[in-house]
Length: 578
Image (cartoon, rainbow, N blue to C red; front, top):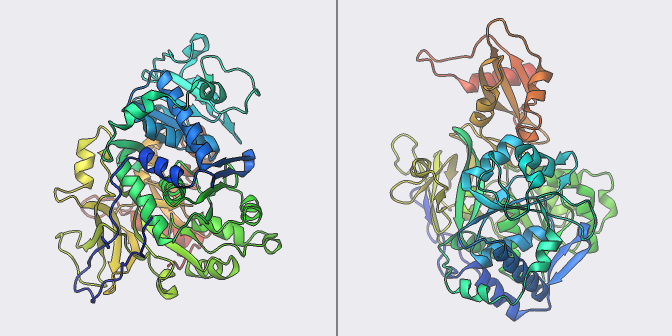
């Protein structure tokens, strides 16, 4: 942890929209496992993890021992450094154990969104060649093991560790997260508790592997919705995510006395980097209130665990503030946290700072491909800047705003595309050099596709998107992916998907569909076609059947006109945001 505050304010007003972060605190140049072990050595008995819904607590020493045990067990499955291990689960202690164990064993952790359905999980597992998968058995209406059996009925008569399937040819082991001794056995699959029992926390192979690991090794793959079809696997290194977690924690001024409530999902960078790694790099305590988001359990957990920090996307904070029992809870221990994932309404930000005692809450901006945070406000950012911008460039990073056509850096206050460069830029998209080259130019700049402005003080404001990405409740959705899926329906001739403003989620999806001649289909039938095949948040809320789309004289579809017409039809207004 740094001994001095990080200075990010530019000393003189900027003459162009380009800024560099501070470098007075050096980058961490070691792998996650080594850094974590050093933290454990400094404070072995401090509380590291509380999983409230599982009623489990771990000190730093206990978390280290269980992570080492799991790393040993994973190696016992025949996995070797560089192999990919998927995790398909909501928040729990097993998730962070897998995160640490894979890092220590040199395995690449692959985050699978729990909202994924059959077609999506099949694609993700095969795209990166996962050899092992750790999965929740089920959650609410999602039966993950049943979806896997749909993909691989052959497993019914196969032993775990030697699974074979025509549709999942790389996957050899499936481990399901159990409550020890409970639940029926799953043919071909292994209980998490049984796997853990096989491990040796003092396995000499771990120290041998540790000597071979480098900070620049890929260690994590996260899928981002693709602009041209299925998701791309953003591949991140130890250096990428360990440093981002550290500097995000610095902006919040985390210390070993802090206890951070993390209701945001771990399968996103928000949870696993801004949450887990921000805590573990500062000796703070990780607190999970529940496996999925529930505003009441968040409020209860903050009170009972005396949390000092709370993360969330705006919709989460709104749900907590508006809960009918909100006033019953003592939230006075709170001081900081992060609001990110989608633009924050300024009025919500003000309520969070006053009603929830989060006087030092910060706003963060980034994308999975940049580990994720590029810009963040800090606890001493003036309030007016905290409610109207995404803060300043993070340490050891650069950001610039360019004219999308010419590539020239624009003047302060002028809108253009935000680009970022530095340690946080991903290793690349897994097995997709062309897409990587489209995103990262020869000078190392990541082109975000977001429209932004930078003022003369270096504060960045996100004003729109060049790409037509939709952000629904913190989930990034690229309409092209939904369009390509809907094209599979036999009655659909053409389809265009746009985002419409929504008070609860920020945006909702709308699909305009042109049917094939002689075909007829209902809105409900389209939704039924989506169910179980794509994530629930990708299913369009609004569906309209139309004879055609508004186009330019050159035949380019004008999505903005679709959006404007639907806003008029539905009486929707844009939310005022920070």
